[in-house]
Length: 184
Image (tube, rainbow, N blue to C red; front, side, top):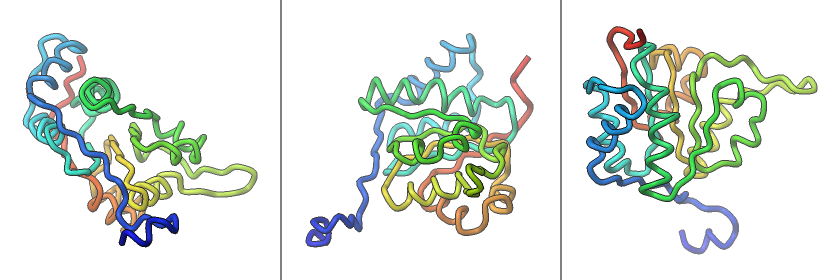
């Protein structure tokens, strides 16, 4: 394996490891900062476990709207990764991802909000499936993906195909958000 590294081919990509001490307490403090009197939900336990040791895997938060997926992944986790791990998260929504696929692919730690709301990317007649390309790139290069969506895992598979879903299963920890919206 080491002899291959000199050729530019890296058979074992450098994964992004995260280990934040007291992650449950830190996550709760982040929730309280943004929402005041946050209610601790069962799915937050899984997010805290991921923050305490992700084993090089990304995070796919899926399920019902209004449960805190975007707040946690767009506002809180990037702050925590910067503070505790000295890592910068490049944050995009699905439309931004589509508008500049190559810029997104160039980042190593990527958050994409609201997967499934984007259309096919068409520039100068060239059609591209931005999300599929980014997931493929993440698997090949060891990039850390954090994703949120209101789609179910089956809907993700239907929209993007079995191949992309299989890659997501391999490179992310999936957390299902269920229950009524907390927005008031």
